[in-house]
Image (cartoon, rainbow, N blue to C red):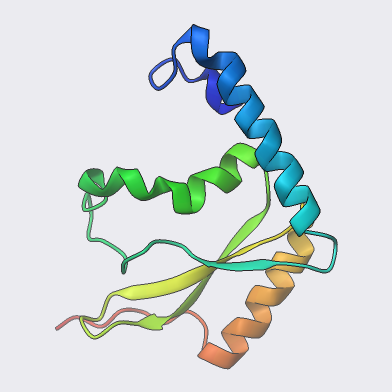
Length: 122
């Protein structure tokens, strides 16, 4: 399913426009990512939110949503906690069907940063 098929966001007369954009993104990411390349990107531009805390921040789904639309593999890797004790991490993006590379990168990053840790209660 592509973005043009979401009637809540797009009118039918815009389908061709959004399909064209999606195809441009696919070509661009295909040229950027080969079988040995990953992108390390922030998952969000801020630390994790508390339950339901993302609702007012839905406009930042572009940090993760683009890779869902394009069907690219992404592995979320925890990196630790901020000063307020909230977890933060990065997403590792690979080329289409290259999940093993994103997972292998996450394993190595977890070794360096200590992997997942339970958040402490204050």
